[in-house]
Length: 164
Image (cartoon, rainbow, N blue to C red; front, top):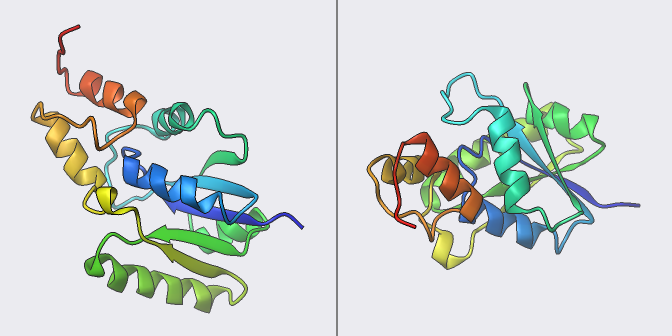
């Protein structure tokens, strides 16, 4: 039986921290669905179609990853894809409280779906999508923070001109 996990998030934008979790998750699961969530509380910089394309171009060499999007409850989405595992990244203790609450709520909604927490590698533990957007909007260097296709999209979005 194929081991399938769901890695949900807004991924606005997809960072090297996200990529690290993806790459490490594929060691434990046969297939991974990166599920782009539509969150009505957030105003994304990139559309779902743009985020899908950016993630795809950042991981194009991997054939065991599916990129999808969803609205609604992640636990229902996981079940619709026949997965009983949700992957969540934890950067710091501050993430843990929120993520624990969500995992417990998801377990209450369906006891057959488990959440696995993964910490990013040390070099990515401080990266947030919010910080990346702010740095890029102010013309700062995001080379070590995001995959190359995401960097290009950020530069274009914020009208940052670079020398060739």
